[in-house]
Length: 178
Image (cartoon, rainbow, N blue to C red; front, side):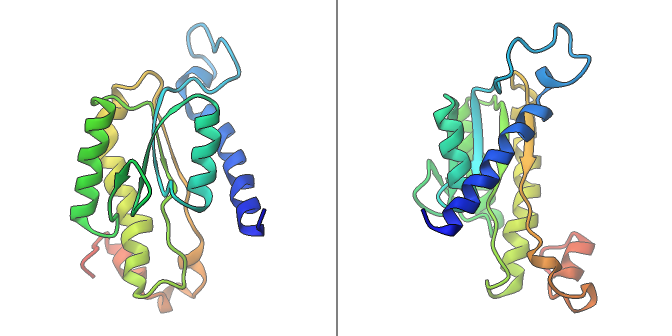
C-alpha cells in the first residue's frame, strides 16, 4: 500500500472509536448502557467517500455492516459538488431520499488541501460545505436511532499567519461570498 493509503487507513481506524464515543448508546448515564462494544449504527452518510480518509472510513464502516451513503464529486452514491450551494442542496436532497428521512450518523470527510486554487474553493468545501450538510441533515439525524456526527477537518488553512490567509476573512465573517 502507498504511504497515503496507509495514512488514510490509520486515520479511519481512529475515527471508529470517535463515532462510538459520540453515539448516545456509548455515553455514560445512558439508560441500560450499551449491549456491546460495537458501533450500533445502521445508516451513515459520508462525504469524501471516493478517496483518502473518506474512502478508508467507508471501507471500514461497510466491513462492519453499516449501510453507507457515499457523497463525492464522482464514484459515489451521491455525486455532488460541495464547493457550491447548489451542489450542497443536491447532496442533502439525495441523502434524505436515500435514507428515508432518518440518518444514524454523518461523517464529513470531504476536504481539499492548500494546493487547490483558488483558496476560496478550499473554504467552500472544507468549512461551508460541512456546515451546510450538518445543518441540512440535522433533522434526519434527530430521527436516527443513536445519532452522531463526526467532522474531519484539516490544518491546511492554518499554514499561513491568519492575517495573510486568503480565506480568513470569509471564515471569520461566515460569508462565503467574500
